Length: 135
Image (cartoon, rainbow, N blue to C red; front, side, top):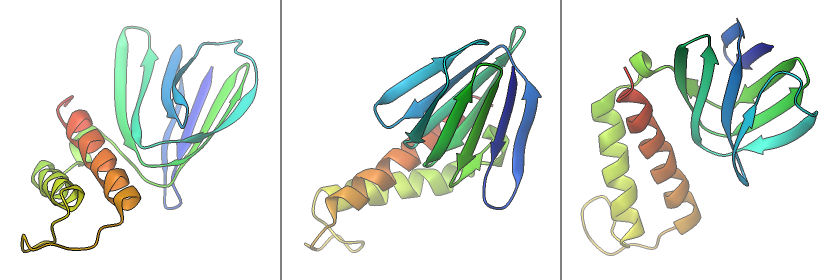
């Protein structure tokens, strides 16, 4: 089946694949050729696609996926290959998000926190670190 994955700024993947696993908002879902059609919103997470025995990993942050029997189209807000991820930057983002979730500002002082935003930042950072470790 054909996988197309694009962001607002670039086409990241156009490939014939045997399987796609992606992070839907209600959990990860897998797609094989001939899958029933559906449309879903994506959560931050790892997209894995397989061509033969070769697996490829991408970090995505939100977007939409359209599944058809012979095609998967992913329109991601942001997506990166493992070799494009700056691990140090992702680690700093993880640390900042964890500090926010503890109710602390960047300088360690108490701060009012938008927990939903901090959780989303933590999910993005953890995904980027996971995918970066795959390279």
